[in-house]
Amino acid sequence: MPQAMQTATTDRPVRELMSTPLETVDPDTPADTVAAMLRQREIGSLVVTEGGAVTGIVTESDVVRSVGAGHDPTRLTAARLMSEDVTTVAPSDTVQTACDRMADAGVKRLPVVDSEPVGIVTTTDVAHELAQSLDDVLAAFD
Image: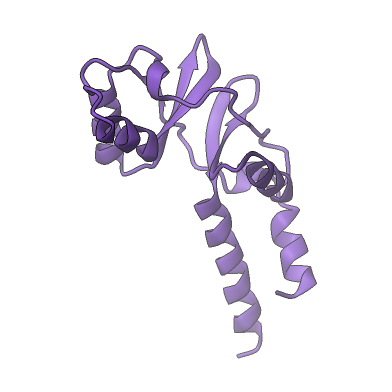
């Protein structure tokens, strides 16, 4: 990848490629409701919030792992499914910062927080942005 393309893409602020609105649930949301929300909204995760603060994140994998282990999804809550100690990023942070944090934490999604959660940035968002940048470079040679 040409250095100029990589720099231009990764130096952009996260706010330019984050997904909004952020899909959230309360900690006491039943797991079957979480699963239904993920399916209906065609998303891979829900951010768990309490009092406007991020307290966790629930992914499709969390739901599948729980149900696969034999847990009753009508008796579990988002609080029991979620990963805690969520790594976040600010809207003004660069895409490179988001990539570094995802790599360091071993996660594919970062809630974007500006005093309260405002969006989410995923590895898919970054990949789409990089692919678009590559398309722009290739088009320049046509």
